[in-house]
Amino acid sequence: MSVIALSVLDLSLAALLVAALAVVAHGLRLGLGRRLLLGALRTTLQLLLIGLVLKVLFENAGLGWIALLALIMLLVAGREVMARQQRRFGGPWGFGLGTASMFLSSFTVTLFALIAVIGTTPWWQPQYAIPLLGMLLGNTMNGVSLGLDRLTSGAFQQRAVIETRLALGHTAVQAIGAIRRDAVRVGMVHIMNAMAAAGIVSLPGMMTGQILAGTPPMEAVKYQILIMFLIAAGTGFGTVAAVWFGARRLFDERERLRLDRLSHPRTR
Image (cartoon, rainbow, N blue to C red; front, side, top):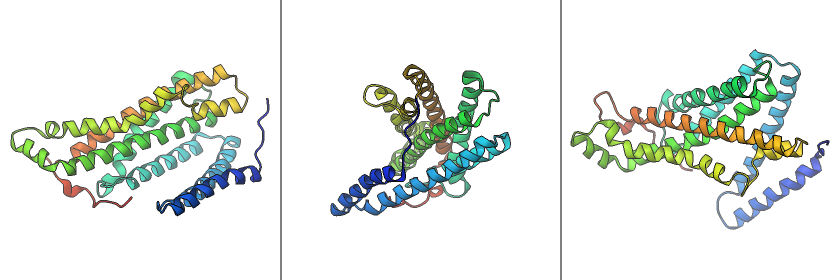
């Protein structure tokens, strides 16, 4: 079963739907019309670029080139985590916190899947390594971003409660414990919803793509189950790490709340 090729005209017809949505958003004065069009343009350019890069990479597979692309993906994801925060940590912490947590979670889970589960030869075979890492980074990025945003905004809004608990003799961990738990829950809620609805409400993207490419449905299902488990683990561990280190950063060595380490609110 061959894949039906899409022409520029086919993609243009799909783009008309986004353009129509942008017109409606502009008419309703939602302030989203221009952002929708820019997002569509950015998506198109980025995907075309990565398509060309992957074409060359697949034809000239080498561990060094794959590692370089993986590093670029990680750094861009780290930048996106920082950019999405309403109140973010200043200095290198703003970039390093999300990037380090995604590295510790996504890269570890990807290596585990490639070596212990799928067992490709070589283990860094690009048609497996890059898509797996991309899906893990994308979902972990969302979890880390949401978790950190809830942590910092919650700490700022409840600073009086936190300082009262500290004055009563609570440790920093105890004073911010409820906010930290809530931040982790928020960071994981999107993957929990996706797992609950997979196969009933929606057909996940990887499974759909494999079926369209001619893969037997049951084989596509098994790969999708694997991906969902990997994403859940990567998102969970990444969010927990980011929120834990972020919570520690909100206090100094004398366990005083230091909200001055956060930047001013960003307009969304």
